[in-house]
Image (cartoon, rainbow, N blue to C red; front, side, top):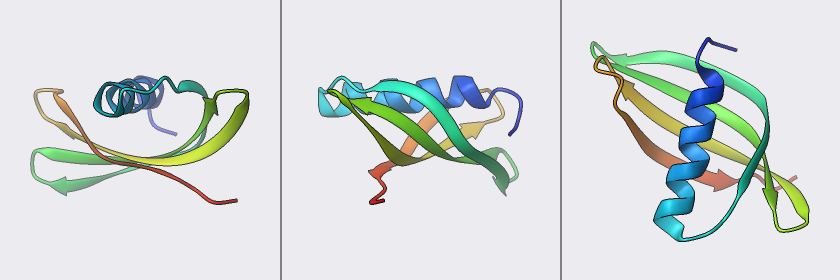
Length: 81
C-alpha cells in the first residue's frame, strides 16, 4: 500500500458518513492501490473492512486526490462476499 493510504481510507469513510448520514467505522484496509488519473489527479482505490452496526463488511472506495492535496470521494460501494 502507498504512504498516506490510511488517511485516504479515513477520509473515505468520514465523507461517506457525512453524505449518507450514517455511522460506519473503519476497521482496516484490505487492499490499496493508486494510479495517476490525469496530470494533477491521483486515483486511490481501496478495499476497506468497515464496521456496520455489529457486523464487519467490505467496501470498495475510490478517492481522487489533487496536487493541492484536496480529496473527493468518487464512490463507496459494499462488496458482496
